[in-house]
Length: 135
Length: 161
Image (cartoon, rainbow over all chains, first blue to last red; front, side, top):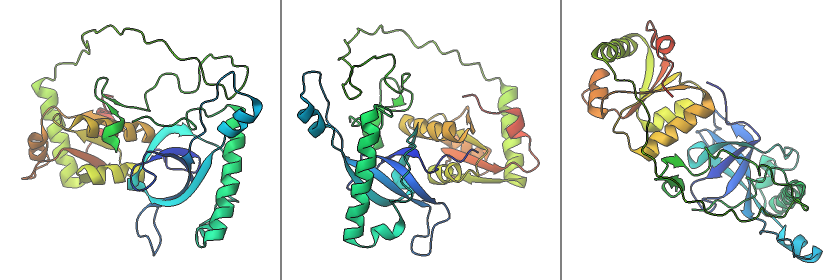
């Protein structure tokens, strides 16, 4: 009876092009909207995970390997598997619904989330979120 | 997709019940360096010794009675899709799962219930029996009680997780 589909919750996308990718909920629409009469949420996820960095990598190589590619999507609750992990990265200002209306706004928003994900990855926290799910 | 994440050997979904969530105890020079590859330990195959209390006839009858009371006076939903929906929008208060529920589905419902802090009761009977206990003429694999009505099913069996 605890609400667990909240902004900040790490989820796994189950269907669609991004199936198997990890994402974080940015905004929830529990009741749905007129266009989408079902519970759905806006998620920001990882399209390309950062690669494994080893000790003998140079600084240039480390920088290249630590790049993250992000995606934004509005996704139905039933196409999502919530996990017990959270990722408290503040994406509310960058990722909004109207950022998904046009292509260039979406690109700008994706770049912003990419920057925030990369900075979070470099601190070494939330390691589970940035590792690829093996299946 | 979930089938691919399901670990059939340990009967859990691949991600949730990992004991060490974040990198435990590794002291790395660079935060990005991956931990050294773990050596595969040969796992001991032990027989699963999970002591399940023998369900007496009395407790089974009492569950059925309570369930009948919920059907009469309370609110409930039957079926996997609505059970997950009730857990997602925090309406469900108790979830019952039949014993022949497929293990992936059972794991998934238990995981959702763990996130929602809702009790899960493993009904001592298959989906045919659970359907009969609900007074229906169809099979019920899982059901979620939204409002118990006059019944005390939620207080008396908070779930045997």
